[in-house]
Image (cartoon, rainbow, N blue to C red):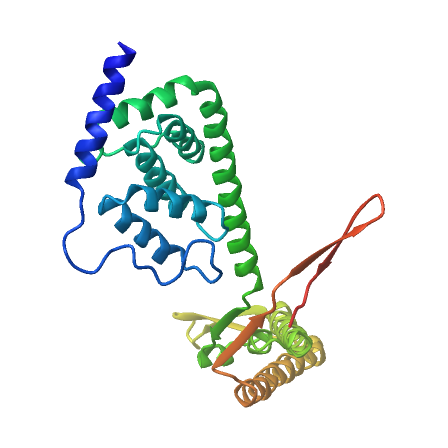
Length: 314
């Protein structure tokens, strides 16, 4: 059975090599830089290696792919493609052992990789899947490591985004209405960010308002209701006259309460007028506030680490 498989493989390699001869014209192996040279562009080098493979120049493709794999600068997807081209080139050259080793290296980078059945002959796919089966345990470990690496990179990106957002200052625009300046008790001053002035205006207006109410209710409390009955000379008709007023002995107290009511009321409205003028003079229609970012600095110290949290507030 082994002999028949070797014969079939040799026939397949000969057929594939014969059917993949390049067309007349400039050779696709012409490369801007030879393998191993400095300044190699990974994307360009990969295109050249693929062109060599597609032209049926499997020895050149294998040599150049292996040289590129020995260099840094190629991404994982590019290295997977290099391993694929190198493994298939070795397989087409009849070096099954080297092809299996290259297939295994490819699967270590992507344990779930699948060869294209429309582009790769069935014997090569069979050998590839056999490598996957023979190394299932090792590839499971590789799969877990790849998942761990992907999760770590995801967390690092999320942390980088979070730190980037933390470094961005926040700009808050507050639009203030001018109608608020008509409200008493220091409300306009509080809106303008002047709490002391607002507290002074509010306290004085509240005191004057309370004093005016005390005077009003004091005057009302001194008033009495007096009734008189008026009868004509013949005594046939009578009228009851009712009057509400302050008794003569309470006139002094009533005048004092009345003066308190009027004086405190006048003071209340005079202070309100002053507060209105002050509010409109200091009114700002739009206030822009910028908050500076918070920085967290972590520095290593013997036996641990020290963290410093800095807030910068405007």
